[in-house]
Length: 122
Image 1 (cartoon, helix red, strand yellow):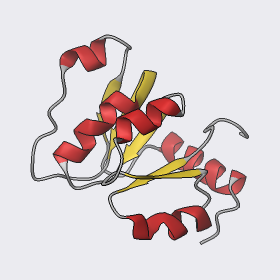
Image 2 (cartoon, rainbow, N blue to C red; image 1 turned 180 degrees about the vertical axis):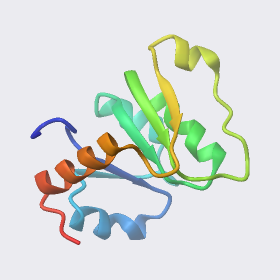
Image 3 (cartoon, one colour; image 1 turned 120 degrees about the vertical axis):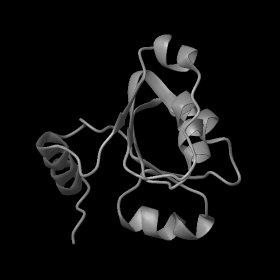
């Protein structure tokens, strides 16, 4: 499935994860504490999919504007605060938000294919 995931940026609030991101195969790194994450993702063409692991509703909400048209935000991080999103951000552009406790079988298959593509080893 080469090319199915496109480039894979790593987003984090701390710059100290930059080295780990590169080791795990990220094509780019965005320090969300120092840069507008949505603007950074849009400069890369917008994200077709974002896997949100942050335990912060505010941080997750900021990702919506980084989605490409028909982009999907998959939330797996459980935040104590709400995720406030403007409906126009979703409606105009066909963006969507999904919640997943563990992911589906196809998600797991896609993750494994991506791992092979990037030579990620356990």
